[in-house]
Structures are given as C-alpha cells and as structure tokens.
Length: 393
Image (cartoon, rainbow, N blue to C red; front, side, top):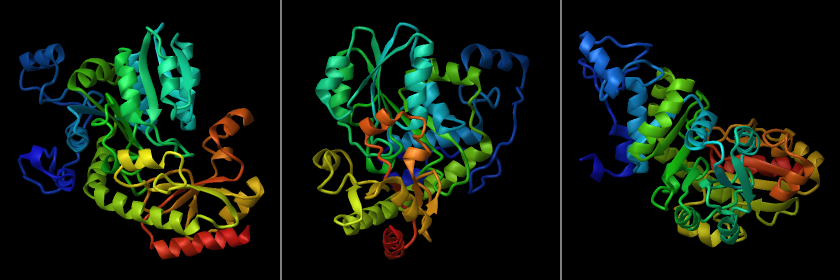
C-alpha cells in the first residue's frame, strides 16, 4: 500500500514500528544493546547480519530505523543509513566508496566543510580530486579519467545557489563508470527528486529542513540496498557516526510536517525575491526561480519550486552587509538553514571564511553577500524587516 501513497502520507505513516503497546507516536528506544533469546541467535546476527533485529546501537536502533525507512520511502530509495550529523553523512558516503588511487570529479562550489573533506582530507589518503565549474557539462566530461570513481555536487550550491544539471552529470558519470553523489540539502526531497534524475547516492543534513526547528544534529545517506549495506554500513558502524535514538525521534516528528513547512517557506522566499529584485541597495538577488538567475530554465525543469533560501548581495561590501544584518529585527544572525525561524548568514566571514580571497572571488562569495534562509514568519513582516535592514545601508 505504501508504494501508492502520496508524499505527505508517506511522511506521516511510512516506517512505523509499533511496540506491543500499539502507541500512536513512535517510541524512543534509548538502549545501547539488545538481548538475544539464545546464543544461536546472537551467533546468527553477528554472522549473517541483524535482519529485522538489532545488535548494538552503533549498528542500528528501532527508532533510528523508523527514520531511515521513512526518508527512504519519501526519496524512493531502496535503503538509507542515518548518521550523527550532515557532515558525518558526507564523510561516510565519500570515504566508504573511495580508495587510494581513485579519482573524484567535484563541483567547485561547495559548503566550506564539504570542501575541506574533498579538497584536504581525500588527497591525504591518496584520492585525486579535480574541481570543475558545476554548471559546465563539458568541464565534467573533460575531467573524467579511467580511475574516476565518484562525481560529487550540491544540487544547489551553498551560498550562491548555482543549479547543476543532475541528469547531464549523471549521464557523464555513468558513461565513465562512476557514481554520482548529490548533496540535496538546499533542494530538499520535497522540491527535487535527484534519484529520479540519475543520482546514485543522496545525502541530507537532517539538521536542516528535516528537523526544521533548530533542535538536533543528524544526517542520512540514501542509495541502493547493496551500496547502503555492503559499502556504507561497514564503514559507518565501525567508525561510530551513529544517530542517537532521541535525535532520530525528533527527525521523525520533523518529517511529519516537512512538506507543509518547505512549501510555505518556498512561497515566502519567492515573494521576497520578487519584491527585492531591483532595489537600489542590492547588487543582485539570487533565487533559482527568478528569471534573472543564470540557470533559471534548468531550475524550472529540475525543481518544482525555487527553494527556501535566497542570497542577497548588498551594494557597498562587508561594511554595508554588516549594517544590514545588525538592523534586522525578525531575521536572526546565525548559520543554520531550513529552520522555522528566518536566518541570515554572512558567508565570507563565517561558513566560508577559511577560503582564500581568490577562491571566494572564483565562487562569487563577495564581501556583500548574505545568505537568507526563509522561515515560517509572515512574509509581509519579513519583507518589512529586510527593507528596514536595507534602509540602514
């Protein structure tokens, strides 16, 4: 029956494992270990895998498994493995797939911590990396080598919101014998079906839209059952990036309202982008569903809406950007996104501050750039708050 359910129904009912008490809200199983009925069962689980049972909380847990099964049902993936954070998911997805001598082709525009893993950590372990302009399919094709194992990208880049042709990159990756790994956080599983577009592995920071209320860290990796169980699980269960049962329960509650929240936030983001474009104090407004966006047509093909994040480049550089931020009343200065509360970030001095000036210029992270994650407040109130910030500039 669940295969025919619409996304909102899956987000409420998929993956439920009720105890003998038949509770309505999912149970939190706060336990490190599990009891076996006999020694033979213990031997079998360690030898052949737990099946529908469990061994140890680092390997799996009933509450965590409910979260994994629910997000997999939503994404249309065969399986999923949850992690302690979004970056644990990125690390696990990439390191589990790669060995010394392998080659990775990555989009150049990445979140700062993702860039650290790809640019700094992978080469330490003998993995070669080539960076390309993610929007240029010819660049992806030219960068492929016989030993290319993975192509990696953010569906929407952080913070400049570049839109990458996932179907085009998937075709190039698969022709070269590589897998496509997509960080789909900004696009969300509500607005973009990256697996249907050709991605082999999907990564989410559940800290963002899935929780959606700034409470807990979490991450999840989705893919084929063979990849999740034979490649990813052995790496993660032995390196310890397990999601706590309590956090998994919070994520389950977040999934129930994910569709409603994302659609409301996206509507407000579009409203703000439309009303702020052309303001004399803004050098540019970046939003995928604005006609001024360089990949506007691709975004319309690939996504059902423009997302919950827009970026504003304040004319006047960092000093003007700081005046704008400090004058905001409703919008908070923080570095999360996908939250019910609207949040503004100055990437050049926070999330991307470790980049060199040359890298920032190359990626379009200017001193005046502000990343705005739109929350659930009234959109008219948000617009008035942003106009007040611009007045201070």
